[in-house]
Length: 158
Image (tube, rainbow, N blue to C red; front, side, top):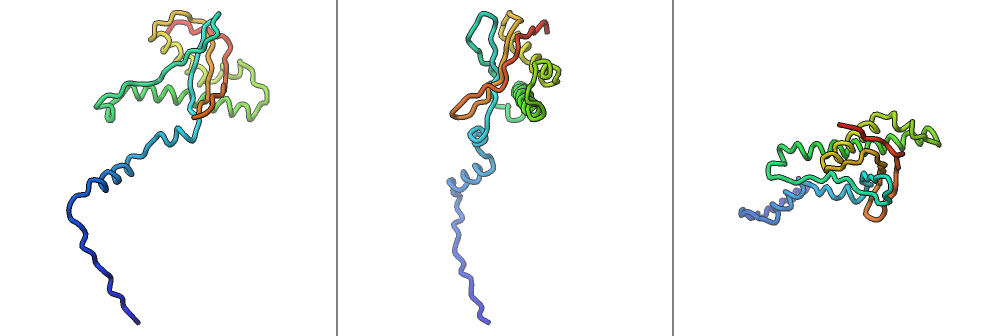
């Protein structure tokens, strides 16, 4: 039997910034990767006698302590999550029924929650018209697809 002596090399003992940065990058992945491979959903609305759809923004300002405590970002993430759940509910209903009526969707909890989100978002922006139509749009890097367009709904008071 032969034994091979392993070669030992003298490793540098000084700090190497480039290696450190690569290790940090490995710990914190780039979440934009997921935006590139999947659809994101947007919420748009319009009022009567208008042909233009307006996008409702869920973007939030980042604060230095936002990594630890950020109620506004958490609320925006929860609202986007409801939007995604509603889109999934539509897809699940389409798998069961070929023809879906507005009443089927308006009875969903996610629809009611989405209507509440619309009411709050439009009230925050000073929007006064309470009769609107909204749509869910699936977006990726290249295209936009209308997933759902609602009937005209009355938002009512908060």
